[in-house]
Image 1 (tube, rainbow, N blue to C red):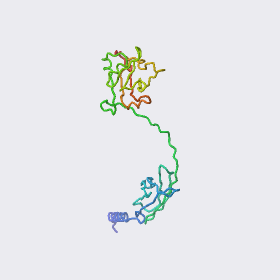
Image 2: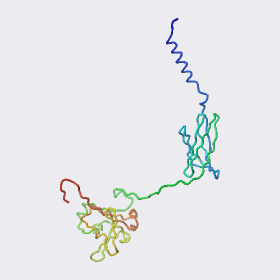
Image 3: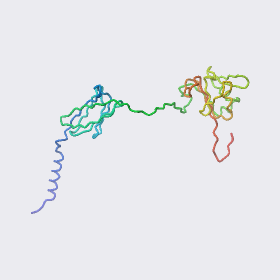
Image 4: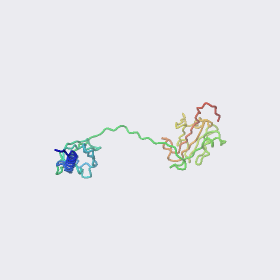
Length: 248
């Protein structure tokens, strides 16, 4: 008898396609609902993260501690609940086609935390865009001044006055605040003296300065205690590392 290979292949393909289109009896979608409560007080836990491990889905509980996962196939699932103030909980659930409800009880726990270090951030910004009053003198401006000491150079900024104590000491007053409320720094390092009679700014050679910055507002608290009246920051020149000689 003659064979019909093409007809057989067509029939086999039709049967496989029909079998794939028939829905399986155990793939009906169901809803898994539940609540997360405190194990001791039985009160609902709000903001707990509930996760279905096999599906990778996460829901957060509301004010009543409730959560719901829709369109889950019937079968066995693993639920885990996490909250910052509680120890984590985990529970295995067998979900029926008609849906199911589960309650997860969490116990309170104290989680150890590492030391938290809070520090201020210093960054460069244009003076016109600064949130506080400040002034600066660049290297070209310092070279053009006839002043000799750093105090005299800083005193040419608005709001900064020169205070002399005898013929050898020169201090700076920022908006009326004297040296007890003004901090002087060289390359972000405070310069301190042994007693109040010594002039801290007289210890700095003005010829070594590249820039002078004066903070004239409460923003000077970035420099720590004693800087209520302001801060004077003196940036020194950096030695150029080059093959050719350079004069300044």
